[in-house]
Length: 515
Image 1: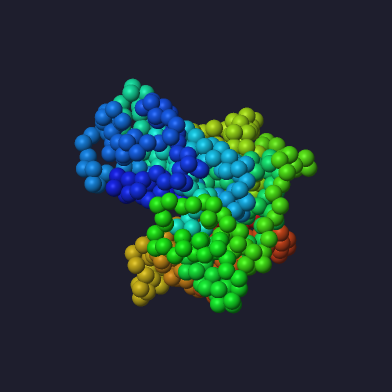
Image 2: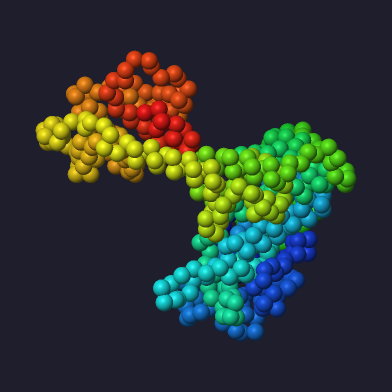
């Protein structure tokens, strides 16, 4: 999981220095500088408070300004926090059971996601003759702080990656870091983290259980076990209070943990030994058990799927719906359906080497088959122009619409659709624009002229809704396409297809042939 937030200098310094990072926890989870920008500034290894504070203020440690213009420090975005959080079962394996291999896998996965952020989404704005434009810089300066607990002192392995509001152009000048693209693609970056983490853990013998949206949990970690460490502070204290009320034998580990979690704010220093003993005692109290840690040898029976096979499936899915599709859609499809099968670098390589993909611009592709299908669809639409009789003449339509309460845009849509001699008309409007009211008017005009009105939609739910709102016979587009055409001569009919944009290109083309 990846969450993001913008930080002022005051917010960042208060949160990242006073409360958490310069404490005993830093010994177990060292801080570090990451990124080509950090390298350019001579920053490496552990993050010092002086370095961190300087960069939050828009200055390099030597005092050099890292902003292209003078800004108000109080209003300036000092940094963006990209927080990568491990699945709950992974946190338990790493922190409750103390598997150092899991911690290493988490760090590797975070590093990979940050490298993609840097390569693809590091940008700034510069002034050109054409105005302000975004340019890719391919460098970030990030301070990474890894934590082992949530605010409720529960096991939650996560890394705060504080990306400074500074990036360097090739000519050496420093400008503000534009974070819009990185934030817009945070789902992909989060899935890259999950994918690399899943692969690294499987290599250590763990088995994963994929979840929706490109996430996973480790197998053998029961829902009850995960829920035990997904409570709030008050629930933990209540559980311990109930345990004490039973007269059970005094448990020092639970009492120590209760002292920690009863504090209103996360303590400046956390004794991980106390927490670990408390977590284990809590599991025992609830009658649960931790699964055995896997052996160090990788699984010999793990079946891997080639990157090219995964990309073939992604291309088939994306090309059915769009003639031009983004590379990120291919990647996200792979993560959402085959998480932990292939490393991200191999997926990128398979996309770059795919013989059927045609790059139309940076990060966007099409296929010859998709282009041919779109051209054939356009050809059918053009053939339908001027090929049918109007539903009603302008006078009839005007007489019908005069007493109605339709607004000018609704009225125009009905007038054009009722009087056109084109076979196909497309309506587009935002939710609440009154398309249903206008369609009802068009339906009544058509029925008054002796036409049969039928409705279709991609899903059964949408088809039912269309039928209810217009009081017409409806079915799914798929149902229409698999049915046999009637042998008798066709009757004048008006077809209304709702949510047509959700149809695959193939279904849309076949629908045009059928009509």
